[in-house]
Length: 403
Image (cartoon, rainbow, N blue to C red):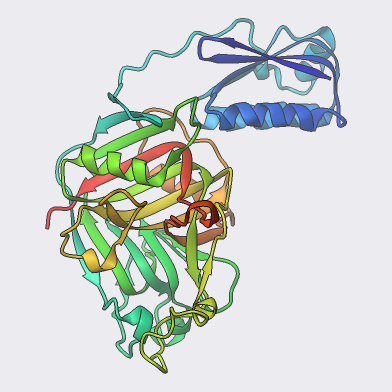
């Protein structure tokens, strides 16, 4: 099988020659997947020189067709050989065949264009308003523990939250499980710190609303006012989380903002708790000293979760915010501070242009695909450090903080 690539405007045409069977279908699938991960959502396969296609090859075509259709992309087979046309028509898949190269759709809803050294942006206005933020718990909890029992919270569709907590109705049951938690659009997810390897989550269904306990963190209510689409440029191919968050805060026009982002992810740098911090410490402030810290925290030693999709929930601000004790610096050389948690999922492309937050979030939790929930950090130790999280492209919903 020979595969060559041609570009026609924003359309990518892959020319195939040979047999599309079980021996070669993985190569074609890899070529299609690589194009989609590069942000190409309009793909055609020229199969004029394909002499044979098996069910394994059909599966590859159908998978790509469904994936791109779900994000308003385009996929089609052009110039099929008689062998290919016959198999697709007999299989009832003639909708994969297109007779001509479709023109690019004309968008009537373009946002304001912005650029930075690493990326191109498109800013959409969603409305007015913003969010009010509540700081929850005492930061001393991390080092000293606490005997305070937090109230049960409902993480409904109006709430954005992140911090340390657990899902469940009884704090007596969930206290030992408290780990990294995030909540948005009626979905709550957390990484249990009781030795469980799998994160847990709950979605709102009818009258059912996720309930749990936030022992330390931030909770916000209100509305998002803007949507920032971003894509790394062709030279850098990825954008650092610091630059993205700086651009998001500047576009909000505020000193602090709540953000929710859905991203195609190049790699994440973060940490997770290995034990719940709710128990009272035997000796004050010893938990995060060396070597005890090894028993309390797990770190990514390098950028992890490459080529995944992530949901990031956080609060970003300039120094001086009322809840600054719960925020941490981003990369060195910037005054930006923040608190970000990320939920990690297998890779799936994100539709371009203006999109709605609720379906973008809910679709990520289809099935049992949640891989991890972690607290994002920056590791600035030069050659030995993991650096910061990096992204390919995505969408950031922004709400200026009004209190």
